Image (cartoon, rainbow, N blue to C red; front, side, top):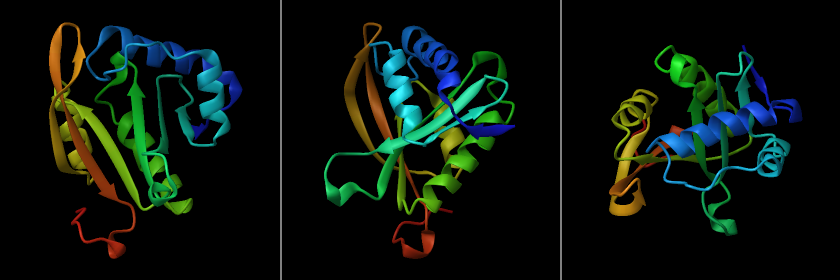
Length: 163
């Protein structure tokens, strides 16, 4: 089951996210998330969680400025033992629906070039690769590309094929 996150979820979300930050190339971030950051994110109303505490998905502003208000960037984190079980797809399906209901137009995924599974995952959800930024990130003594993928949330308004 998937539901809106509450403050009670902050600790396990922080633990899962910080594990991904510390141990993987899935994210380029190296600074652990704080409890206060997680609480602030939950308070935006854009965090969905699996009730088994094994995954979450969230979105937020893509860039600052009013011209980008309808474009969001998302994160989806799934615990290692349950990746590939459909939980990520379920979370993302509801997250996309949430973003549509809140009049968002585009959802962006910033994917690490080391995370081939994420590229396939996003492609299966209708995201298309729209850009690649070579060697813009450095983590664990290696340079990594950022793959930019996007999905039009209202394809009838789009000039990009999101199918």
